[in-house]
Image (cartoon, rainbow, N blue to C red):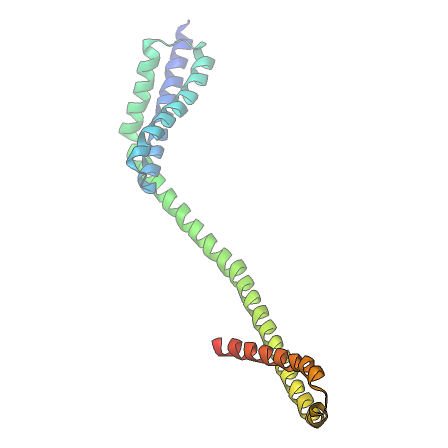
Length: 193
């Protein structure tokens, strides 16, 4: 392996080390911001190392055909150290600001969706139910009114009813009982409101 390839490998692995540091800071900031439970940390640590391996291995394979030597590991360590020494604090602050901005934006979008979509739909549904209830009340009042008029017109026929034989009269009495039951039921419904 030539000197140029070795220097190229050192530079690539140092950049991979910086990327691993950035990935670790991102993981740390998101975990702190999300207030993860303690038992989830080992799982996410394994995921971090899997992501770091997925980052480093293809680069190592491309740069020096996957040969792992001491200078490769030292280059990664150099990149991680350089990142944590020079850029970690600024990146943590920047990631925190980005997370806060993202959260505020998501809340504003959710509020906007509620105001522009859900509230008008809720208003329309409530208005429809109120209109339906009003129509039902008007129809019911008209039916009661017409029923009273019909009953007043039928009063003269009571005399005729008394002259009907008793067996036939019992059959006719079932109709007013049914009307009375319906009227009582509607009275109960009104009282419950």
